[in-house]
Length: 282
Image (cartoon, rainbow, N blue to C red):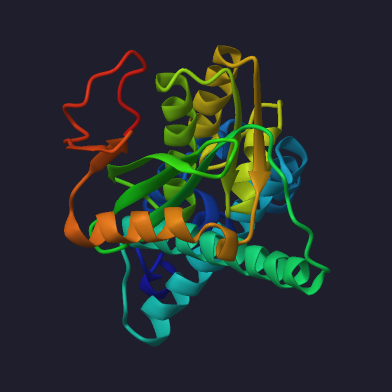
């Protein structure tokens, strides 16, 4: 019967197996989230398939997967009850944005908890690079803001970099962390501390295991740069302690310019033509 057809593709019979696995729109969503591995089985039953998925991968992946199931169903209901249809690209963006929002809430809770504790003066013995990112959700671009300070806390370099085709603020923060690591190598540091206010990104940079989340490839790139250092450490800091990098990233996003300032000399540059021994990160 016509009314039994999928409201999105109008091809298969609309049961839960079709909605979450077989519909072409659903397959496109899982593909855009880099979750094509969920099809690497021949399990016909939906519930056994869900059990298999949850047993295969990390908590981070399962969290994204559950968010995907929820928004796939929610968008299906919008088609039926509101007559509003979204593309697979729009739905995958919604999923990434929701996960980023959850991460932001976790970070804010951590900051509130940290700010409630007695303040202690942190003494750092190493050169430090602070990083942050600003994200343009309309054009899927971001800017990385990097601030380099010596052992005495004096700013010795700043840098802002453009990234294109960025899916979410979460990805933007990962790009900024990678750029901070590259900058440390380019400036010849052998011992370095890298500080950022994205707790999730910092935790993944600290981990030595393979990351299978949506930013896994970028985290892998960061891990591959660690052997360039005698010692490199990643630390989470509250946003209030990262205002310089945050402001630099926001200003760069607003004015559309990249810059590099070291030792009192400013050099505007274009990210797509910048050449260095580590190559481009975008």
